[in-house]
Length: 99
Image (cartoon, rainbow, N blue to C red; front, side, top):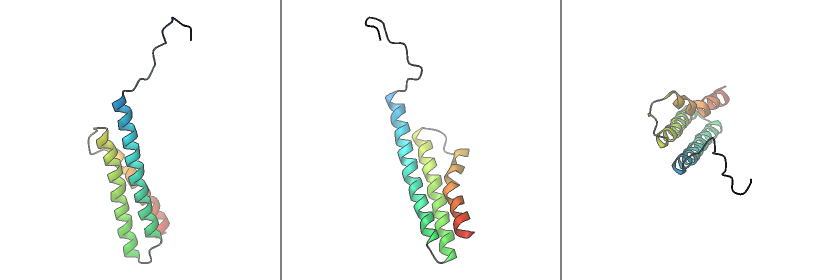
């Protein structure tokens, strides 16, 4: 940097609000997805198959809720194909628990 010369403009400048949205949506989605994964672990250690299926359904609901919360923080429309991403812990859990 030479004194007296201006800095070159940045390519990607994000506003503070945009950064706050990304941080908040990431924290919300990861926290709720951890809870969904914990419910899958609870289903794995449960003995009754009916309880396992019920816990896997609850895990799927929490996974969809996590993605929905992230979408709403970014002010996107509530129904999106991204909601299918919330079913990943449940699908993995179904493979592990019911296989």
